[in-house]
Amino acid sequence: MNKIKKILFYSFDSDLGENERNLLNDSLANSHTLRQEREQMDKVRSLLTQNDTFHFRADFTDRVMRTIREQHDQENYQETIFRSLLGLFKPIAVGAILLLIMMMSYNIIQHKQSSSSTDIVIPEKMMEIAFDPVLPLILE
Image (cartoon, helix red, strand yellow):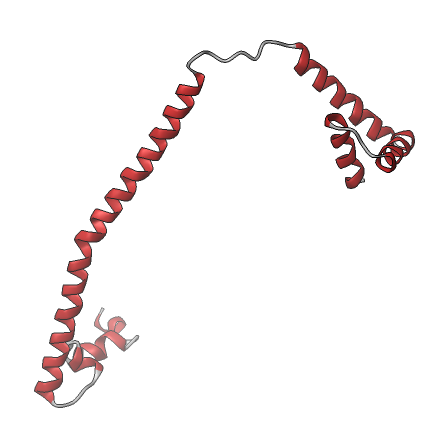
């Protein structure tokens, strides 16, 4: 049925081959819904060609192009803001990472060992409090 509908729509704008024309005529003879659809399309097409009410003002093209340009400019503005924020925060992030690496290196050299608590400067008791699920309940 989908192929028949494609042939039906194609038949409005161009000539069909003999096989397609025969297939469409047979399908129209056998299907009431297909005939209704063709009649409906004929009505719509005739209404569109008869009515000359679709007139655009002289500045229609200019208004459409202005709207497109404004949207494009808005997108460029948002992209510019994003890039400026990225440029602002990238050095801060790099500096924070370098500072973290320097602190970890200092702690490793100072304690001559490496563990998660000494690398990020957290005392061992704080690690126990942070990872003990019962301790906060006891302290309350």
